[in-house]
Image (cartoon, rainbow, N blue to C red; front, side, top):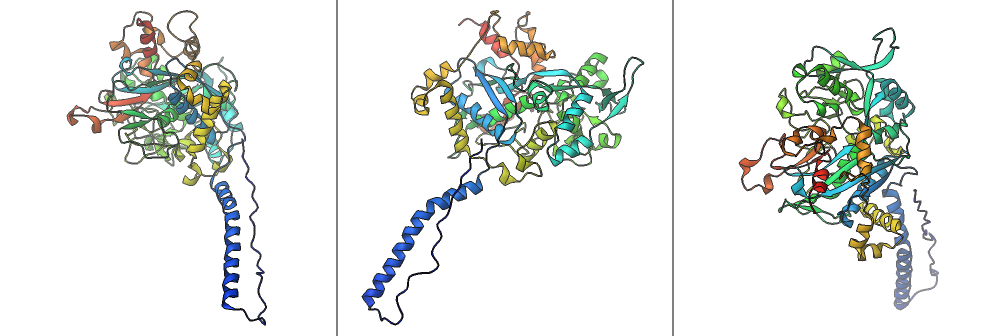
Length: 523
């Protein structure tokens, strides 16, 4: 909703009242006249100052979009009001930049950290569909062009028209290279997250099915690390804190579509079966359509190999906008150990979708983040469509937090003061859990997993018992952001490679194994 502030500033009268030069003034009269003059000036200044402040605020702040992506959160039992607010604020951040008229439905679960893999602090498992037709995607992306980057990106989409047989019509395909590098795969299917498909109009934009499942650790196993719930950001972040809002923004970003098919790779292409490599191919996402390396650019192929120096490009690989992480360290080939569903970890922050978050930091959405979502099919605020300056990324965290508080209060029909006066009671009333088949999985999350078709989530209900099972099934679907913990490690030598979660606080795309384990344990 736009808030327009209109002000009219009082102007000083340029004609000041003067005493006649022909009438001599006594020193007392002159002094009184001078005092009267400055009293008038002070009165005018006091009247004008508030209006100047309002006008300045109106100039510096960006108006809220008339339309914006909206988010509906379902909170599992155990979530506190502070934690709910963190996601409501994170949603406001994305709504400030993305103006598609869609509703994104997310299930949020706060989990005892002892039930998660070592040092994992959170993650997001998006609802996906691997069966979108590439030609249909191209048509919708064409219709969705609103920015300069959209036009460039569409014009340079990888395109290979091929007929595989008499019964197969000519179809739009794209070409992908894996680790071998001397050959390519072609595909006419594409995987999109539910939210990304909504933004493109390939899925009903206001359906109420779940679009993602997010878990957050309660950090109970991390005695030296606390969540920072200061969403107004009116003071510095404590050095030992992990910013809750930043993590929530990051996890929502994965659900919106920032995922890569390279994270589905189990082995190198040469060691994989045909079915394994085909599964990798079918996991190609809208983000991957703009993933190139210098080598693949010359071939005219997308580079979805684990290891190469790949980057985001909207002009067929000629220009690198931002580097991607390089994937599973066990592959070698130059891989860096961070999942490809993130920016490349480097000395300076690329954006909110970086793989690492450091203690005492408050990462924010940056231009490369928005460029990526823009070309994937999301629409940016109108002032961001011809280029993004740092000033256009500024956020009023006080207002974002106040709006989130008011929204939660309104959902309960109470005031914000009442909300905080009885925060535990009201937070409990905002939680929801539906399990009609008593299988320890919320029915709405279960339906999302089944509809996604690619998640092997039955492993724990069908006899799995954790341990090695984390390396199969849903574990392969996790995409996590990591927090290097050198600052809280007693022994610096215990810090492992980033491919391991040991010694790192991790967050990204997590499966529901933790929820299944928790619900199956005696209460």
